[in-house]
Image (cartoon, rainbow, N blue to C red; front, side, top):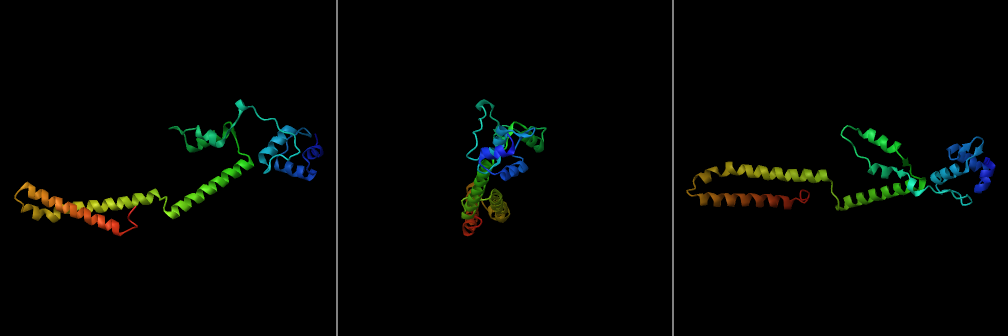
Length: 195
């Protein structure tokens, strides 16, 4: 079939078929258009798929279905002696079908929507950055450590005057409780530090 016949088959102008040819959507067998292969490319790359007047393309057999990049990637693991580039090459050179225009657009829109949802959740305080939480917790642990390590130096003279182990225990209990209450007051008074 020549380009004019292919244009008639799809109900489009010859100029449109020429544009498809320039984009690489038309497959030729010699000087003739390979209708089935060209229809498959049109279905895959055109935003609206095949024009309505086109003959339906024969579907691939279900047992011989190729995998999308995402499906193939889920089955590949990074070995101890492999680099990420080698694994990416495995995914992309394997039996992988690239997404059609509509599927790629849907994935892109889903990604943009999920990203916007994450930003909203972060702004509303439903989600926090793990690094910020780790930094805040580390800062609080440092305060507790510093305060508890200062107790022996502060209380040594007082403990030295005690005559029984129960007196030492009572003083230590009182001092540790006081230090922990002081640390709790510091954290409660500063809402940025509370996580």
